[in-house]
Length: 165
Image (tube, rainbow, N blue to C red; front, side):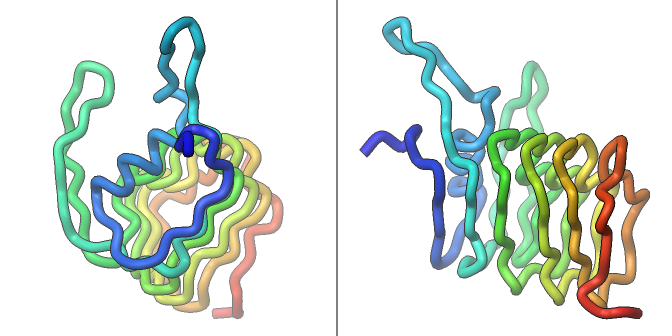
């Protein structure tokens, strides 16, 4: 099976940094490469991680000429975890997450809508910035902190809560 042809993926169990790195390669066009004259790029547009536990583990990664340390914590969508995953149009988050980090979905330019799980109490700075096709964000009742809600330049029209405050 050619992993670069996967369009839809459902994961079950525990995931950590190394799993996220593979997901990013499948869902970010910037990770395309040329092999024997052919451009190979991921196709992952639908990601269902609703049945996973995100576990603590960090690692170094390179972006351009800079190196970063990605700090994962249990049950948190870490800062920049899915940033620039421009092929994703849909992502189903695990109900167990409690926070979404800064720029977690930055420049997911094909993401159309997202449901933030009920246990999430905070959303980081520019978590959905440059998500140009984002039309809907459904927020949980218990959300207490949104740092500078720069969803994207035009802003999603139907921004609503699952229940009123």
